[in-house]
Image: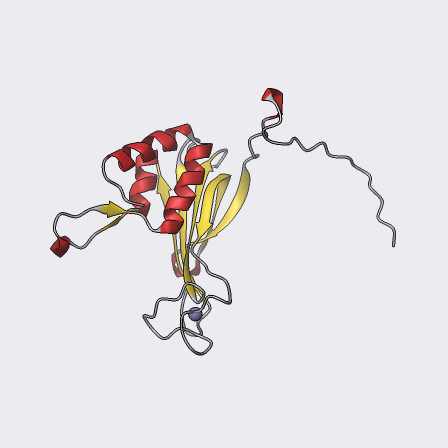
Length: 175
Ligand SMILES: [Zn+2]
């Protein structure tokens, strides 16, 4: 069967001239898995997202699936997405949503999901920061690699987030 092209779309190529910068993505509805299998819908744009998932050739164990508590990012991984709220019926423009998922292909494991609303860029970062154990001395903040990747992208897309992230890094946040 022949395919007929009925529409020609002129896609701007990024970085090919001052007047060719890519348009900001249009806000859209996003269905996000939350705790206990609930699904919430937010309207906005994806600022950054990342995953720690490794490929099917990167298992770190014998057999199909990692044992309990065994670290294997081909079996169990972390996903992060940061949204800028825009046009949402409930939440104000300029706020953020951080969606985190702990996923697994191991039978019997469950998906951990969380949707966190953040009024400010600082709250976005706080929701992703992990603190070292107190017994190792003074607690220090750090970010899992996937969270740092998502924040890097989101900072490029959002100057307010970029400022807040730079302040955290200056203050000792490790990535
Ligand atoms: Zn594995």
